[in-house]
Every structure is written in structure tokens, then in C-alpha cells.
Image (cartoon, rainbow, N blue to C red; front, side, top):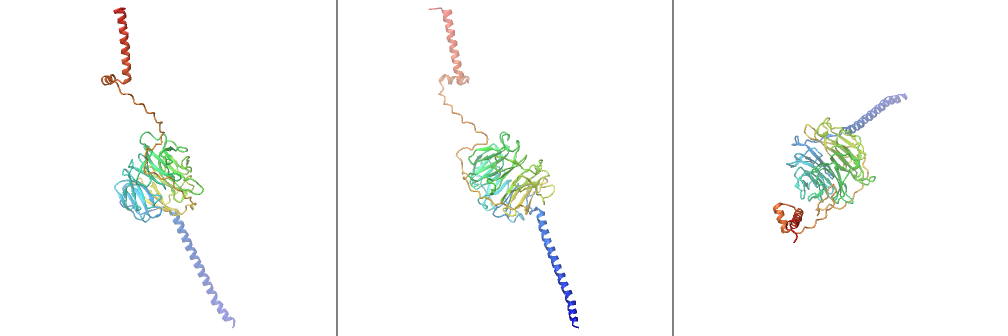
Length: 456
């Protein structure tokens, strides 16, 4: 009898334990599935890649030529287009036109003051904004050429590439001639801030002559330009130049240049260049951009010359090798025209596509697979860019030796003036004719006196 209650207890307890175990197993399974779902979601998000931003209302068939992200506020994006400038304050969800009426080739933010924005235009010079692109005002004082195709920002000044050389400014509002006036400058980059403001400029055309003697130049701040050619192919043109930050392992800013014959990297300020690998030889890259927090991270794009076949690439070794990174971009129209990278970790990458059929779009991704950035070395300022220069700036071609001035000739005599006025003879010829006639007269008089008149 005493076992009955125990039996009843056992018969009642065992099923309860089984139910609790079953419930625990169920909860474990649910949590496992939830964790797997979360992991799958993260994996899927990492694999999604690019996604389109909100449409730029009113852009129509106009093209996008440049993008820029405010360094201190990554949600602000500028787009330079055929119709002016569009600004987004919500990471591309919506866009507002803030400058209209003409084409804008390039946009960017001042390296010293992130709220200062600048734009280079097609024939209207430089425009400046003190409120991150909300309002704009002309800032072309001193510009020799108003077709501004590229801008580069340093700690000591700003460089502009124009259709007739390089212009320099200490603040983006007052400009002076920087040289290379006979070249059409398509790209500029600040190669160094210290010990002086150094610029690399690339050309895609020559106003006079050809690019046979060179198409990539560097200036160390003194106004003289040096042709860069070691490791670069002959007969190419430049489409873009970008310079990276300095890390502890690399004492100088790395530089990448995209040309009509390939993409090249330099780790010594442009003295020597190495061709990038991993990009199809037939594909001409049109734009490249270093990550603002990692000099080992670089992105490059091609627009395929306006036809189908453009693509997007990424490099994690500072621009030496590239791999396709076009997940999420529309198949058949990956014509990348502009790239901007936010000051974030992981980096937010924004690209502008100009498909051959029209209808430009902006795409964005969070590059979660990018490697962790290395420690950076803060670059010091150098010699400030002057507000003006007292003498003309030398071009990249050799400057000829100064010719010794010729002494001022004495005033012409009456005979000289008569001869020059009557016969339009130059002065040396007048003397020669005079002496010939005098000698002939003396000879004739001697013969006449000797043979006709006879001796006295």
C-alpha cells in the first residue's frame, strides 16, 4: 500500500519532467532558429551590396558628374549634375536642387572646414557654399579660365583643374594662375601638405601642341611643374587622380591615377608608378577613390565610354590589385561615373551611374566586408598657398634661357631715313649700296682722267 502513493507520484512526475524537457528542447530549437535567422539576415545584408537611393526628382536624362560626402556629417551628400547641384540630408533618401542653370563638373568639401563646400562648373567658374550646399555664391575672383573640371583640397589651400591649366587658392575664393596653361586639366590631387602644398595634375588634352611630352605633372609649390612618366604608358590621357591618407607603415600619401591605358599606383609621391592588376585591359577606368580612413582601401569604376559594360572594383592593398565589387548594381548598366566614400566604419560607399540609355541614378552600400582601418598618422600643415603671385608661373615645358637684350641702335641719319622711306631698304643694305656706288664712281673718274683727259 505504501508503494501506491509512490507509484502514483512517479506516474504523475515523469510525464511532467518529460513535458518540461520537451518544452526546453522546443525553446532551444526556437532560439537556435531565431539566431540562425538573425545570422542569415546579417549574411544576406552583407551580400546584398548596393541598393538605389531615392530618385533625384527633376534630373530626367541629365547626367551626374560628381559626388561628395560631408566628412563630419555622412548623411549629407552633394551631386554635381548637368542641371546644377542636388543635396541630400538623409543619406540619399530624398534630394533637393540648390544650384540650377548650368552644368557642374565637380563638387567637394574643404579639408579644413567640413561645412565649406565648393563646386567647379562648365563655364561659370567656382561656386562656394558656407552651409554644406544649401546656398551658393560665385567665388571665381582671379580665375583665368571659368571651365573648372576638378578640385583638390589640402590643409594649406585648394587647387583647381581648368580647361587652361591649374589655378591655386588659399581659401577657394581668391585664385591665381598655377601654371600648365597650355593643357586641359581633367584631374588634380593634393600629393602632400607638408612641408609644402604639393599638387599632381593630369591632362586629357593640350590647347597648343600635343601630350607627347607628358600628361601627368607634379608641382612642389614653387610654381614649376615636373613631368611624371616613370612606369606610365605613353600617349594616354588622365581621367581621375586620388590621394590617400598616411599610415604608420607608409610615410607618404599613396596616389592612384586612372588613364585611358590603365590604372596606376604610386607610393612615392608620383616619382614611380605601378600598374594595377585585376581589371580587364579593354576596360578604361574613369574614376578612383581612396577610403578616407584607410589608405589600403580603394575603389574604382568605369563608365565604358558611354556604352554598356562599365563596372565597379575594390582594392584592399592600396590600389595594386582589384576585384569586382558590383553586387546590387543593375546588370548591363554599371556605368560608374563618380564615387564618394563616407568617414564611417564600415565605409558607406556611394556611386553615380550614367547608363547609356539615360536616367542617371545613385546607389549606396555599407561595405561591411572592408578590413579594419590601420592607425593613421596626422599630417601637418605646410607652407600656405599665397593669395597672389607677383610673376607668371612657369609651365611644365622647359623655360628657355633669357636672351641678352640688344643694345639700342643710334638714331638714323638723313640719308638712311631717305633711303628707307624712298626704297624701303634696311639700313645695312643702304650702306652697302652707298659704298659700291662710291667705289664705282671713283673707278670711272680714274679711267676718264687717265685715258681721256690724259696726264696733266
